[in-house]
Length: 583
Image (cartoon, rainbow, N blue to C red; front, side):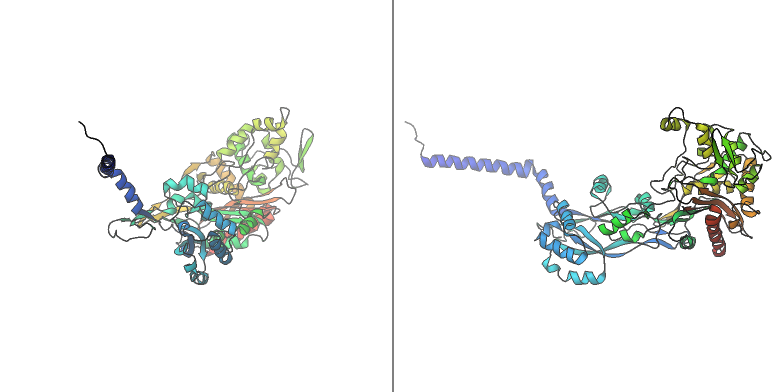
């Protein structure tokens, strides 16, 4: 006899089976995988909030402000709290002159950052902030934060500017603590010293509910303070910088660089036309950005390091130095007679003075800037010698200044001519043209300033730099300055120095417009032709010494005319001014 299973028995077994299955999974969840789900739960209720540091500020050599931080009312949106995207976009657009499509793009790109506050508008006036915040009860996704924004005290290129981080920059840098709302150095010192200026993030641990609201359970020891960015003390003199900017010829393009010949510290750095970096402080509009980029005068081009030009006659001291160093000439050697030009093959190369200079030795050749002397001198050595010697004097190579994107310039080699003009190219004619700083040679204004400063510093070349020291909390760190030597003997140096002195201080010298009675001014003028066919580029390079300072300088006016009549008088003005303000 056997027992029969009833339906109730089957139901009981099923219930028992389900019970044991549930019991197994409860055991698995609470015992076997407890640590796993504990971590998941904690991640759901615990949120790490980043505390951003204050960006370091920038001052001149006398601790006067160049770039400071100022309070800014910034508008943010929290994507996870948006009720009506079209409505909120229309509201923001109507009050803040921002295109609806641009706002929608920001929202779309941050759609997965539900409870992250995403920056929309920076640097909002207080009155507008008050007026719009009254309506935020209709727009729960919008909020204001009081933060810091950069304030630039003058229009210039060397400070650069900061701007909202792009998606590409964010992907590249997010592992180093940047948020999608971060500002980052875009150009100039702001970019070059980004890692020093930005500081280091701190953090705060928050416990939140299902809606992301802070429950404020964690009160103690769950916050790490940020480390603010270092302040930078520059070698710039604000007074000299402002004065030189004010005397630059109106509606002209060009660059003026002034540096301390003993240290390489940049005292003034002007590139014209310039632009106001404050345009970028609150986020530049598309209209303003397009205006800057389509301006034919290129106001955003830093002509000190990004502009490359033929140097004209300011290159002649390098030619002279090479001739002296390889013993092809000495202080008394007189080369071909200048009758207003010189024939090479079937081409006549003119001197700038039609009636000619006669036969000259090296000092007078530099003083009067006789082209024929340097034409003849160029035949005494090879193009490769000239190429190598030019670069040994740090011309047509990067100086290594603490600015991003410095151009190197250019000096052609024999191979370059063969590659570009064919195997039958006449090297001699090109070399003759290079001898007076014309043709394919290209330099930056900064390179010439550093070279002439080194001549004034008895051959010691200092790497040009802006940073004098940085201040980290209460600690000060002095900037290290690299020094090198020009490939010149003491005898050559003295001869070049004297030539530059008489070019400015003796009758009929090309640079006499820069002569100053109580200050020793040394210099060389240049008027370089350019392929655009406009007026010549105007150069005046040199250095000045007195009991108060020793400075090197380069004045360059693009299509400005003659160096002696345009650039030299500008140098005289700022040298006199600097003498007057030095204590």
